[in-house]
Image 1 (cartoon, rainbow over the protein chains, first blue to last red):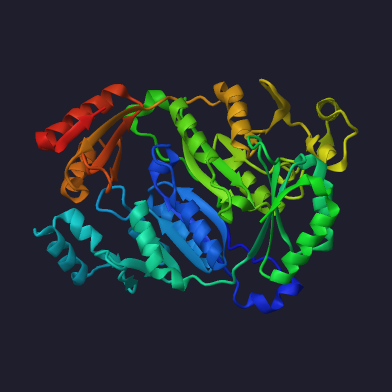
Image 2 (image 1 turned 135 degrees about the horizontal axis):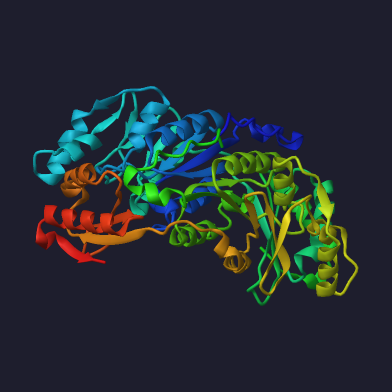
Length: 261
Length: 261
């Protein structure tokens, strides 16, 4: 990761929305992702959820289980985005180094949390071993958020939310704190077009000249029978996206539109 | 992305392998991934394929369609890894900015390639429009590699391979150049364990003290009935991984081993 990324200048039409605009970076931690053993389904989930909440995910960064690399990435992302969500590396084994990496990012020592130790002991019914004791150590000053029916709290350090890599647990924990991630949701229209992308590319460029603040996506599909391109029109301003939609539909031949939704 | 990442010191037992060790970074380019509209299945594919070939993927970085961001990431990754593979952003539309970003990374101007223009014209049977002409511009000095039955060549600039985002096309192109990505493959053993991860974590730490160069992964599964943890033991040295496997099996109770493969 590099130096903090300057925010894009806000479009003038969106002045009244910008106070509430917020950004996020997702940090996926795990050799198993990089070596192709496990497919990361957490970042697609978080991207969808954060988008629904109106939070802009600006980067996803996938890195190995190395304290120095984790610390540098956490530090850089924490400075660049409103929220950082990490996934993975918080279990009891040798390659679970995320908590140490987050602590190093902020120059914080780790401290034992007796309440977590007691909960692990109650859950297992035994004396804790070294690896379980490790799970009860968090950066000094971290917020610990209890998450529904999960016995292990969510660890939050400044704007960094430390989620587990196991998808079922990540989702439960995210659900329990989703109210903390607030932005202004987008209004989205999808237009399915039967022409080739290269046949409409200039119309799209013209549309963007008329609506410079429109977020316009163009996604060719080569295995669909009924359309060739899915277009997405988005804005935080519902009227703006509606006007852009009408302008787009006027530009394209009527029989090139398979569906609008 | 930050400054070039120093390579890890090579383990002494692997001296004879290191000459052929090689690394890769994957750069996923596309607002549609970050906004949760499209799930990136290209980087998992590339991770699996590169792993099979013995190439270490060290980072996956997912960024928006912005020339400056693309250029900075390409430049940094190109300096840090032997190979950089980009995915997405090379079509005809306004948000296809990868080729311009790669050119900017290396300070290269773009040039028209008449051969590509002719091929687009033959494929479409029409005069090229502006957006199609854009697709025939590549950074000066780029290698153009014809890929099997695909009419559009793969663009390679220094160690950067520019793949399309459409998964079917990316795979065809990767297949056509896979011989270029050569490392020393890993030997992998998987051990499925019926105990909780926290019950074996100390055995794993002991194993790593005996076999410090072993790549050892531990992946808890909470929805499997027949085992609780999948362990992976890997090394480029087949004898080393076999000795580590034997040592691991001797450390764990026999009835805790569900399966070895």
